[in-house]
Length: 576
Ligand code: SRM
Ligand code: SF4
Image 1 (tube, helix red, strand yellow):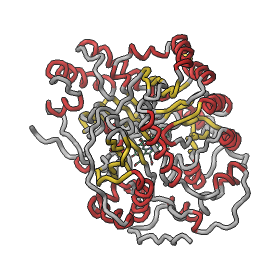
Image 2: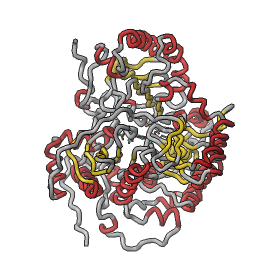
Image 3: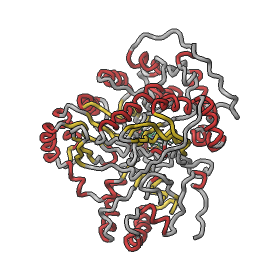
Image 4: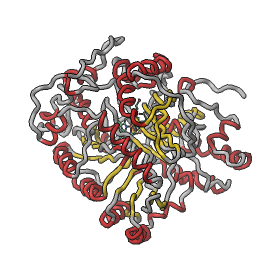
């Protein structure tokens, strides 16, 4: 029998979410009843908290809020549904169904997320069960895609090192499977499985009845690519390859991007490397690390509950020792590695196994039929003839993966027909851009992001052209609020929403994803953004060293200080 988990006493009263989890009977709550209630198109707050563990959030269309309020109507409630897809892989027959479901129940679009999975928006309450059942029919689910659990496990997306990539992806899948909640609630509520009568602690041998204090994220990078932004993860694993064989992983802990405007006790933080372990140990290592956060994370104040704060409160060395105690052995010394970039490399590459892979730029991960650019139709046509996979990247892009030389010709015809290589003509800045969803669906958005970044880039591009920087790779990211879903606090140029049309401008993240971006200007609108960036671009164009990235330059030139520890993130600038 599994040992009962005894949590250490917490400072302060547990937060309301802890009480909801405790009373939920392993994530059941009154979800089944709430989804049968036809009086409202929403659900009560306590069930919404639990719904997250099932991969969905109640949202409302914020574009309609004022008008509906005026008409005394309830908000335009709808649900966001996020899939669990370790390492971001979907078979093309699954994609065809996802495409169909986006039209049938959603808002007609598919959103590729910054954690390599996909989201549907606009699902109405009455369609939720059918939607999840149809996803189940193609062997996909949404379990633990949100909530206080381990989320979608990310993994380097570029499959040209075919064998190695497959092995590393398999580890992502194994970690995901091992850390999956074991409760039967999802199957009972959505898939009509028989109700489980015995709901003892043993249902969740790893999590216990209260699950984690907060969300938890794991990502695996394969150097030289850091496309999972490994230092932004609660557990960042860096694959160590020796003589072309995967031997193990360097383990980094305690990354995270979220913060609250005005509260300097909150900050983005980089995961710190605590050592190396051989690959056979990695699943257990992830479990033990996660249980330390389970037992020591703050369960009173959610904004201080992420693992990064637990580590900074207890001390990195103490947390490392506690993990080692639970493992029964010590980490080995971290091994050498080198990252070169966080972005994706577009176009065709040939894998070691002779299969081809095409990485397609998808602006902000939004797949739909745009005017003059029927992207969704194009991908559907490709999926209909390609019997392989689509892979999603942490940069919100899509890889048409494992294409045989014969199918490549036919896929090329579709690529040409729909001009999918149009992005080759985009500025390198746009090709390195990420924006979070923000308005109109995200309830936490303070400013536009996905709907605005392309326009802002359009206004920056002439400046880049003027200074000969159009083809210079620069990582630019925008988040509609300080939660940082686009990981803007690690970008070379990062925008963090402050209010409608206003952003904090951050500079100085590194191209390789190893540094935080420091606040440079606060609460500025478009005009000031352009006026601020222009002279910096000019300076960069004139005085950069050979091969020097923009993020490194702004530090060398004294615009901002380098930040490699989140506790320095809010520190006043030093005078050079
Ligand atoms: Fe996120 C909350 C969207 C990746 C940090 N995030 C949200 C919610 C669910 C808003 C909410 O709580 O009501 C957003 C739903 C918007 C919508 O309408 O769809 C949302 N987050 C997203 C996505 C879809 C952004 C995107 O455009 O791709 C990403 C989905 C990832 C996935 O597939 O699982 C997404 N979110 C991230 C990342 C990046 C990452 O994980 O690599 C971060 C920063 C890393 C981190 O976790 O620290 C991130 N999201 C947050 C936070 C801040 C957490 C914190 O520590 O304070 C919140 C708010 C919260 O948890 O309270 C949040
Ligand atoms: Fe919403 Fe903020 Fe995340 Fe953007 S960063 S999706 S605005 S929570």
